Image (cartoon, rainbow, N blue to C red):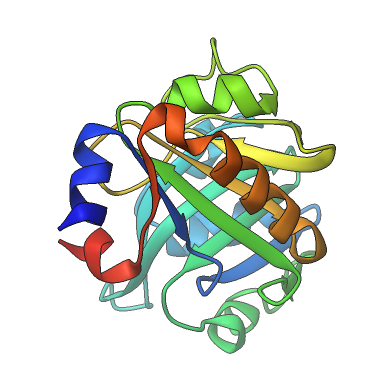
Length: 193
């Protein structure tokens, strides 16, 4: 109850590192993404994030998640279920590599009405102009981070993407600043409510 209320009235910090994360990189990365999602990846610009399902060759939904375009020829695929083998099969004949970065990439969801103010306090990043479903880079506690204005709580929220070895320091910096923003570390059960 306290964790759920933090999402609605303050800020919640959720470790979403268990998500599966894949790096799609190469000349045909956009072609691969466009082959399986229900949105038009050709309209995405670097720094843009979309939420989308991906489908098999019969149009049946396999999973859904966020797909940020990190660079012109580089995307990150985020999913609840493993899909490396399937994604690699879809890439057959294309000039693109699909790499599982799940173990080396951590992700923290900072969600709730005070999350923007909290990020402004702890991050060296352009939070003021960061639009919904857009991403930027910066630092927290001197560690390089990617920050996207995304999340599925239905409230204001961000996701912080970091190298695994830096995740503890970033988590600690956010938690130390947390009391002023009503922050609570929150588990996945509260997130699913």
